[in-house]
Amino acid sequence: MTTDTAAADVTRFALLTSPNPGAIAVIALRGPAARRIVALATRLAAGDDPPELPDGRVCLCRAVDGDETIDDVLVVGWDGGHRAELSLHGGMRVVQRVMSLLERLGAVRVAALDDDPASERDRVLREIDAALQTAHTVRLTRWLLVQRRVLPEFICRRDPAAAADPLLARRANAAMRLLRGARVALVGPPNAGKSTLANRLIGHERIITADHPGTTRDWVSETAVVHGWPIMLTDTAGVRPTDDALEAESIRRGIGQARRADLVLLVLDASDPPAPMRETATRLLQRLPDDQPRLIVINKIDLARALAPDLGGASWLGVSAALGDGLDDLARAVVERLDLHLLEDDAPTPIAARQARLLGLTADSENAPARADTPA
Ligand SMILES: Nc1nc2c(ncn2[C@@H]2O[C@H](COP(=O)(O)OP(=O)(O)OP(=O)(O)O)[C@@H](O)[C@H]2O)c(=O)[nH]1
Ligand SMILES: [Mg+2]
Image 1 (cartoon, rainbow, N blue to C red):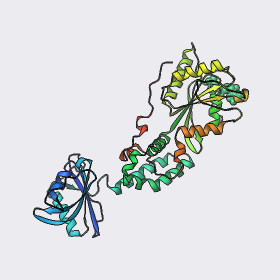
Image 2: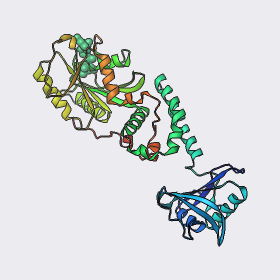
Image 3: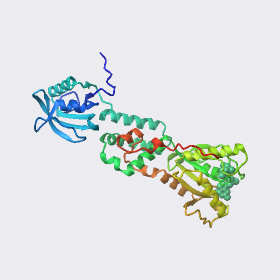
């Protein structure tokens, strides 16, 4: 007879400890009948009542077969009675008797449960190894190798305090963003130097630049390495009113890319007079969602050293993409806005939404920005 032990309505159990004699043995049950089966197989140590299995509370009980007490047992339950663990003395006879009792009560014995610590540890390691396959920078590779050492244990421990740790949630989201490809988009008016700045950040002349508004047409993406982290940089067509259908479509697509980005660099031109610069910024920002993370970057500060534009109180960074001025500050600001500076130590950090969920964290990347394009 075959039994579909994976079916959701089957209650399974597995011996988590070695099958050889040991000081203690742990049997884990998973499934809808876990609470009922434990209630039938045990009695509170003090008295004859079955344990109620409140989530996470350890109860000292006796394993009982009818009127006969088999052994003392510590019982703990979770998930509203769907998960339970029995800790017994590790003598083989006791363990065998309790396991056959559980089988008689309807539980199905399996070699390993999906969520037992050993397979969970393996699963986390596999997730890290998969991430290592696509880690394109030395820094990310090193960071993942450190996680290989610290993360499996941390996930298996399921520290209840983890869910309330805001820094852990930010680190996890930063790591997941990085592993799926953190996206930074450059938007701005034509000729502001977006492509020149993108080339600087990428490290070579990837994108054509020219002293001619409308040089970049369709958006272009390329990996930039910022402080050792890989970042997908997207350069877009300069935004301006236009009657040219092709240019309008390029602009619409560029804005669509920006709306999907984790961070937008709004690139303005320092040689523009203050009032038009402010108007341009306002017009462009209106096309981005209010909650879109953005940095205002004023380029070409070599042409306007005493720059002090009033952008309605918004802060900005001055750079010269041509000369390289201000790029260190810009790189630092990008890293901080993406929370990548939080990944600097060897603190365990979930790298997958599944791991974050196990710790009770909300993974931003599960609802990553996937905003609809706006009309041009
Ligand atoms: N003086 C100065 N010129 C710059 C700087 N950055 C870019 N330029 C020049 O500005 C012109 C436009 O640069 P691009 O990078 O092509 O500008 P863009 O914003 O990509 O323009 P579009 O693709 O048309 O939207 C080029 O002649 C660049 O050499 C800068 O920091 N200082
Ligand atoms: Mg360009």
